[in-house]
Length: 128
Image (cartoon, rainbow, N blue to C red; front, side, top):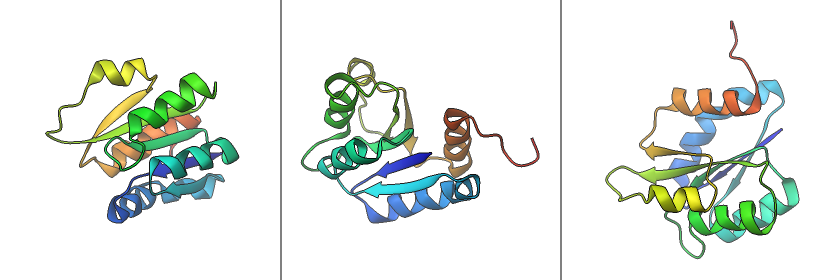
């Protein structure tokens, strides 16, 4: 199983990776991309189970990437979580139109991120 983390801000990519790194013990591979174009290349090549996708990015934004994956590439089985900054006017309707499965607001709770990833991948937390 693979998770792709897409954010143009290096510290946020690192933060998300750190939140999810214990999943590597369950055999989950963490992949990263720094922009929407790179994300699409990685999604085509790797077909991750789950993508944490920043909305506001240069070149291709999260909406465009999500729309391409869900509606043009026919990869509807890939679970996409859009990440949006607090205070940004997030267009829920647009998120639904492009097929996003969920969205979370930054700054996010690392435990919530991990719980979401476990749930999507069907993994139980240690001690469950």
